[in-house]
Image (cartoon, rainbow, N blue to C red; front, top):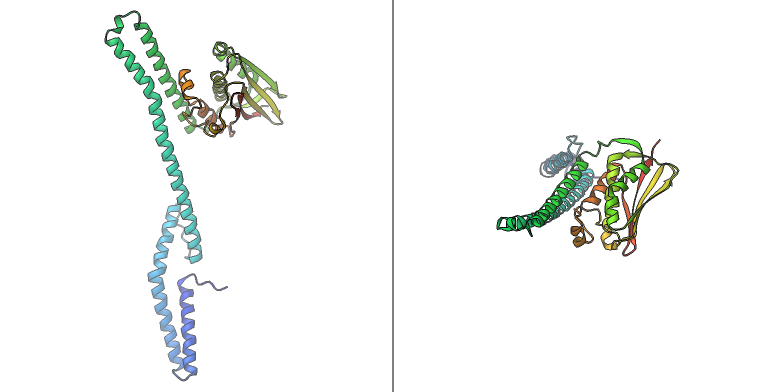
Length: 332
């Protein structure tokens, strides 16, 4: 099939039409063969010039800009079919880029709003306590120590928020700097249980480790995986039921170990599961603030596991409990 997709082909096509018409005129003795050839040549030159100057060059500029945005100067011979295809691809890519920019902008706006909201509460609390003490409460033994302790608690909450934000920032910028090593995951979990034992005792929650794998050796960044367990087990205690339990189960998966952190706590609504790993997202905001959660723990877990090329999964039933799971490679 003959594609008319550049000035030369278009000019030839139009000239052939003119030439054919000229031959018809010659056959009717209306002109001469020489005149027909001259008319055809003239028409070719005019059409070629007009198409090239008024259409081809304008399209070429667009084509050149497309390549410029692609970050390359390798401009091929112009072909209308190619231009159309690449223009569509470029437009689709820019549309996706714009959509991503809008999404990032919404995320940035929401993130700033969340940070402001989280810091505002302890700051206002501290301001209120300090103002009361300055207004004479410092000399009142019934309230001075109580307000100082409350102010100190609010300061600790602010420190926790800032530290968690720093952790996420480091994880986002230092994904490749993982200290991958073989370690004993049983011992790591026991160490986490020791750290959280007092908190679990306050809720009368028992901590259990069940290793059903044929190995306790796993591969990963030990410190960061420890942070994953601390956040998950700590959450299971915060949102657990008094007298309940938190279980860490290790299941065999050939060259991998499936890790599950399960509890029989309050559970999570299905509508909240998709947003669970967003920064500052809370299922129960009132309870989270009462127990001092920053809303960043699960976001940190997600970042750490993504750095290990793994994902965190969750299944939960309201009033029954939740199970968080991820996979780690076995160590040698």
